[in-house]
Image (cartoon, rainbow, N blue to C red):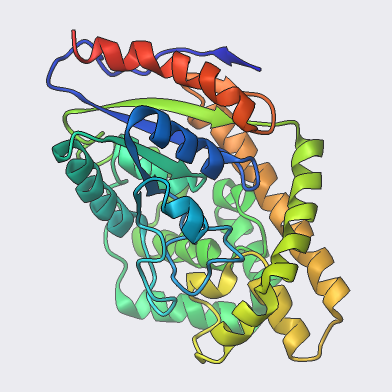
Length: 330
């Protein structure tokens, strides 16, 4: 089912270190089910590490755990912010560290679950020391995006910053704006800043064990399509209709959750529902591909599961974790 991988650089024999399990994977890989099974088997709390599942208005489209699943083990940082607020990696890290500390204080095992690479990297390595961007530059950059559109904006960025231009998709407007404003404010590529050592490094006193779910991509694509159809049946269109009624700016994170822009266009009468679903599945699949690549190279440190998660795999995964937990108590 999987393979053992190299240990991280943390000294796991230190008695002062407290364990944290990270369950990472691309969207639709089954990581929420695995995190819940681990929490139940090992006496843990599930802590969200997905940038969209923090928003309370987006339960269906972000595939948040159901109320029935949440009742089986404590779940933290799910639906804790209104869609009108933007959750940065720094803000999530602060909230996650607080939840991890509370779990340890209650003698429970923190099980982080998510596929947002920036969040996981912020927790494990610390935050890149990027200076604050002046408001004037931030506003000017956003105006430029609005004036010329994301395709032309991406082309401009790629010409000035090939590293970030190559990393970012033309449709990822939030990150395109961030890369351009950092370049304008500092004269350096965001890629260079991200390569700088993180401020504070990994959270002191924590030992991480990472499980990466990396199923075959063909199976993942099929699962994404099946899951989106189920989301529509569960009321995803009504969820987006309610979100649209809030009158929020289109450039905030919650309004860019996969499926939201596409279903918004359908609600406006611009495209039929079938086309909206097709485009949402396509965009989600492209995102899953980027997640897969990043996780394979950046987060697959301890154990990799190279198939779609099913509950029959749980006992073997639990047995892989137990030696790590025991070393912290020796």
